[in-house]
Length: 401
Image 1 (cartoon, rainbow, N blue to C red):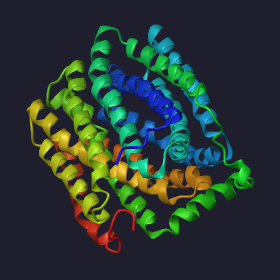
Image 2: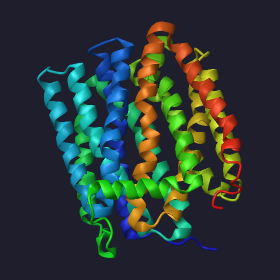
Image 3: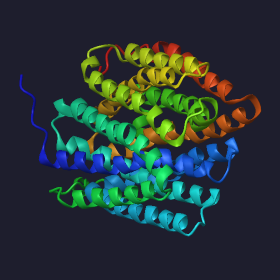
């Protein structure tokens, strides 16, 4: 059977995602490198990851409510424009040699605050732009595009540009946000659910309604709890990975960017594989994916060859993307449209609760016990959670049962 052509509006959303994530890929490598230019303390560097995650706890739930109250396209467009302004402010600090770790934290917090709201509105847009049968395909396409731009193109280019001129990757990131906002201007239609008579009470009422809906659905609730544990454990190692690359593997700025390329390729493969796994039991797919990620992290902690680390990252990121594509499509399929923003935000709130905790713990563990030990702890934790998933989801037979 021929595939349904994805709509013009979705293709515009896809283009905006590709553009903004190209700039994000530059910043992904450039911001930690900027932090290492002002400090070598692993606790302070891990603090960048904390600053990038803590705002989610404050803004993701209100962001989900706003996504259900306001026009989702307008919300994303305006926040992309705001993020462009924030990045130009950072460029100004760099140009005047006024960058400090506090400035880096402040920029990370502002960007993360906006991103928490943008993600709620963007994910809620997809079911209104594509047929239900195409949700996995659309989600996989967005995920693979993010990986190509954010993980394949951006990081090595960001490392190279940072080495040539510190401010250049941040200028490009600012322009990418502005361009994404412009693209969203051309998306037609309205994307507000206000006409169905919901989301007119207080913000607290709206937030509680979305969280209650999620918590009463056992599969979504269990997935959110497991994801919270995964976020905590994965960030123990992820927050100090830049130090592993620079100090343990001895990579340059450009080399660190190149190290992220194989993982991006693996993620693309995972996003393409995920739609083919929808007929398999959810507990099996997610268990295998998590164990693969954990074992890859464990082995990485003992390696010194960048080539082998890159090879393992292929399997690690592919596993992560299989999890992401399938669980996001599941939420988009089962959650009512007028609740998509709030339920998605409630789910991600639980997930992101653990991330800053894990990042902070990773910084302290690395300081006291070393970088390799920190990665090993992260990998062991992921593997143990993966082995427990079949028991946590034992009542679920298939992905969409």
